[in-house]
Length: 252
Image 1 (cartoon, rainbow, N blue to C red):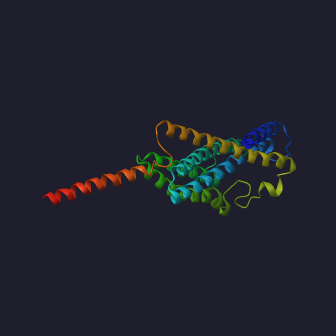
Image 2: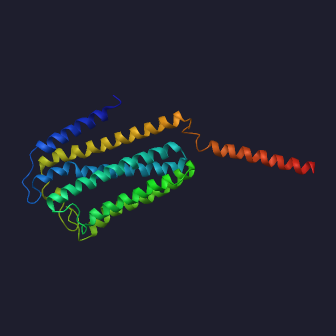
Image 3: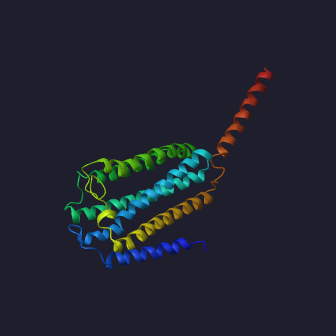
């Protein structure tokens, strides 16, 4: 069955939503009922990291093979990854309000790093929109995508772990969930939630890719030849121009 993973995605998310709101949770100080957000907030960032990784892989493939289809896939995965990162910040703000008493704690290095990471990828989309030439757009975007992914991982994974000002579990010297309070009940929902949200993000990205291919087919933009044909046509034109010049010299 070709689309088995889509059915799996639906089942996992249905299970996540039901158990996320109705399932049993451990009694935790401060976190209390807000621990249920673990099934939504954290998987959003796992989904974003997965999609941004896939995006940079396709960017590298484009630089290697110069196939426009790889650029289309890189852009689609980056768009959906950005969306899930934004949802991760929204769910994080709700959690921060419940546990820290504020929607945004400016001293929290991981929150600021997450916002900066989204800005880095916002610049990626601005860069793509600044080129009319498709070949240049694809090439510069692919190069920037590599830089953006490295910065993304540094901002949300490296800096918070070496900083002493982070309030997030597992950062700034704080123990992580898996070391003190991610009990068996939470794990039974958390891991399926991570897989379910990742599958949903991939599903959305594949839909964007399909829409882009339909658009290109409708407007006569071939995926294989769109970046090659202009070069060939340009070469042919140059040959004609050079021939005319030589003939002119011979007549003279």
